[in-house]
Length: 269
Image (cartoon, rainbow, N blue to C red; front, side, top):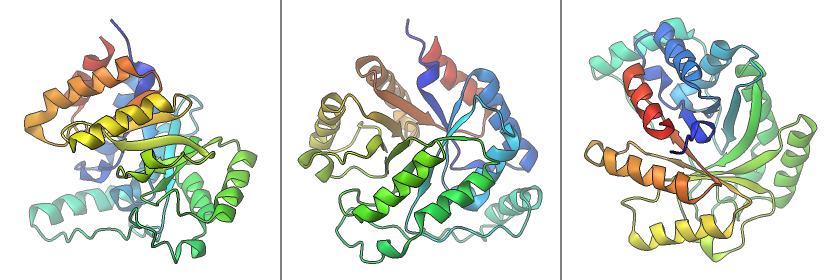
């Protein structure tokens, strides 16, 4: 039986849906206790609180590794501490007062006219500070077409990252056929996509072919628990991917310690 502990990543997109800051920190600490050492986040996750909570929970622990992101968006400004914000968010959700706004993203269409104005280095600096200078394993371009980025911008970011010992650059977002029709950029070390299950059949095949073709790239898959009725099938599909392709990792998230433990045990026993 394979133990995939080192290939499991705890996703921190929805930390703000915990009732309190204490609960958010508790689920992070429990993930570490179970054996998670890899955590996925972004400046926008949990309306900006995700990085801050991770930084506080692990406080310079050297064995914790984080992936965060840069994108064509404004970094949320934090004015209210998490100890107040999380209960307030819960109350707003219960009263149905929360207005979920989609963040501005750049689609995988060549409409990157304003990307050159984005200062990715400043975004990384902000993330490092929020994460309390934990080890950042890599930086991913968030929903930005990797084939339409400004080469000088990418090179400048890569040089900066190498100088601060962040050696992985990649892409996180939706699958697009360009990823299979063109050679992947030389700088791409990580490709983070939705798990190829219950997608378009052609896309599923293309993604699996892409993994096999690019054995030197790390593939990370999310949305394992996207639809409740398909969770068992998705988990089995995720486990098969881990078994068939050694260059893959799986991201999953929950605010339930019991569910987290059960999911962890599924992949590690």
